[in-house]
Image (cartoon, rainbow, N blue to C red; front, side):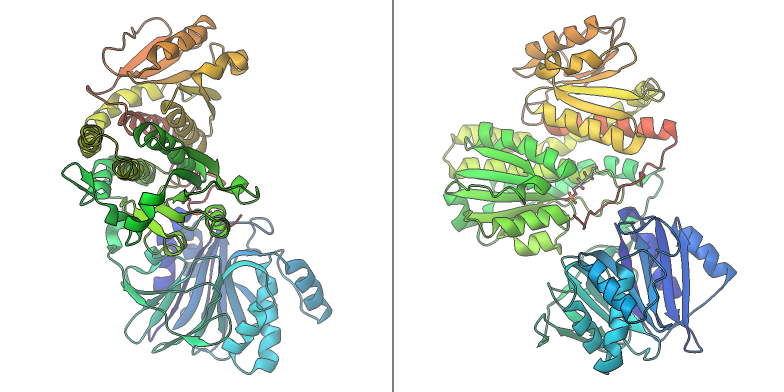
Length: 611
Ligand code: F6R
């Protein structure tokens, strides 16, 4: 998704901008650009299609520098992937603008501006903003006022960053529904769409709120709310380290993040289970009054986070004996749902900025839920700031576009929620104590499971030339099959589907032949025998079976069937999380063999901040 960096300093800001873009690469993008006011007071613009390295080549071929500048990585929405559509967009050779989000009323504004004589160089909605600010600046007499007047006419979602080369003493920014953070330095200040971009420069951040406009100069930051009143927003000191996003010895971020899972899960559980008890305070100060009222949970999320929600349904229904429903956010927000009394609305998101999930939370707040809650990996995110309760997954920054450690830490956090609700519901203490012990041993069990890596790498060779794959599971293993299929399709581009194994004979069995590898998730649970019968149906159609199974499940390797034995003593509560690990590794190795861009798969973005 698009990335923003801006800086105003008593030094050349070009290296700060390029490093910031590099640190935002993980969000996914297709073109980049930078605009500076150079030593002669001229606006210098460089843009390139492709990676940040292409922009660097352009800067080497035609160097420029300046003490005020803005830079952007674009993920195309309006208009194709071309240099002309890359940001920054410029009006009148003086106003430079970068923008994340979508302007919904850009067509009438464009028509109006064309009539007023503005010439458009791109197909983007962003160029409308540049000309509109330019137009307002002619009468406003001040860039901040011009931006306030211009944004008042915009509908949609935006984070925008602007400078005027004729008055190069400030950067003006504005946001609605797209994140924007100001980084505070000594005699210099910065702005970005994500703290990651600025960590080498500062740890001190101000998060702008909905509708805020800020005037950022070298020594001052002035913030105005949507009504134009001067306001102060709190300063936060980030605990993230600048090197948390380095890849180290690993070939890809995804592999590094897969191997970080024992640590990430341990951090997520740390200080939250004491003895056999979950500390409710981990969900926030209001948890003690809200949790006793919860009789039902409705979970909303997207993609991988949605799969975590599907597993959580088992934690809440089987473990805590309360009803739980799960839904994708893009459907929920337009459904006009009927809310049962005492229902908790729970949003799950790695980034906390996913547009559909955030919109669903905002919708839910109007609908009479007992409270809203977020399970999220980014403490400063909009989702966390807006939900009543929150539990942070402590996965650390996830750079690979395909979610790995974010998913397993979500499962760990959701198992804590299940246990907290079970405690409140008065479930037998011996049972909740058993759950607590099983949850606590997850990091160690993940460590054991990672040892399957070498065997999985060998299996991967049998997938590299395939066009399709089918994943099967039952009960809580079905969402894990869904997650395995999503991982494989998004990074290897092999078409993969997941089905609850009992559904096979209702249609998908027609697809099965000797060219369709079938991957089964087979923990030793009460559905094992049912799953075995389903797999017989698949074998009978000539498919090659790859079964991940507990020891002592009775599967025998043979002609057309391969077995990967998981570590000993996996309990049902643990199996969704543990069976995820080999499926992540399988997708990873298949993608490497196929030579795809593992960390930044085509057409995908890390943080989907547009609808
Ligand atoms: C897949 C993946 C996506 C995200 C989805 C939601 O590997 O990462 O499906 O899970 O875009 O993102 P968050 O969790 O940030 O709301």
